[in-house]
Image 1 (cartoon, helix red, strand yellow):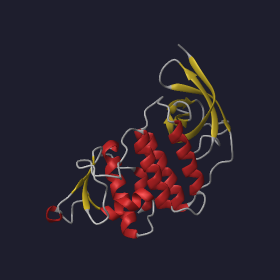
Image 2 (cartoon, rainbow, N blue to C red):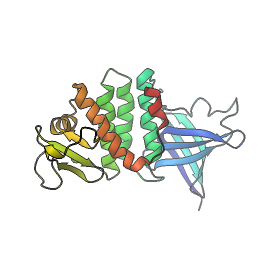
Image 3 (tube, rainbow, N blue to C red):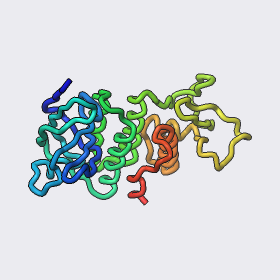
Image 4 (cartoon, rainbow, N blue to C red):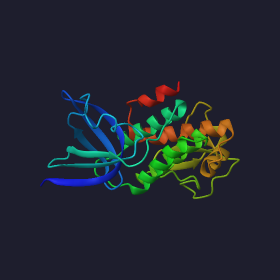
Length: 236
C-alpha cells in the first residue's frame, strides 16, 4: 500500500550520496521517529532541496512510497536554521550521530523530539555544553527504555550516598562496592558524590563532569556497539 505523509515537522540527522544525483536522508520526525527517504536529484546544482537538506534546519517534509524506504515528495523550511559554531557545532553533530545510530525507523518519540529541539536551541546560547549533552543523553536512554537510576543501589535499594563508591553495570544499575575491592583503573567505579552531581546536573566540578561523561559513554556504548562515533574525533 502506498502511504503518504504530509508536512511532517522534521530535522535532518544524516545524509549521504545515493546513486548519481540523489541523497539518502535520515529525518527525525515528530510523529514517525526516524524516517529514511530518497531525495531524488537533491545533489543537482539547481535542486530545490540543496539548501534545505541541512543539519539543524527545522523543516516540514512530505514523503511516501510502498516500502520502508520512502521518497521525499516535498520539503520546506518551518523556521530559521539553527546556527552552531565551534564546539557547539561538534556537539550538535554528536547528538545527530547518536540519534541516527540508536533510533529505529518509524518509532514515535515525541518527547525525545522536543528534547532534541530544545537542546539544539540551547546550544546556540551560553548554556554549559556539558550539562546540555548529559541531560540529552540521560533523556535519550530513558526514552529508549534504558534509564539510569541515579537514586539508589539496584541490589539493596538504598539511596546513593555521596561518601560511598559504586560499580556501574549498563542497563542494570549501581552496586555499592567495598573500598578494598576498588581498582583505580576500573572505569566502572564511580563516587557517590559524582552520581549525585549528575542527578542534579550540577557539573561545575571538573571531576564530576568527567565522571558524568565517562558514565554516559559506558551506558550508550552498550547500545552503540564497537564502531566509534565519528563526531567524537572532532573534540580532540
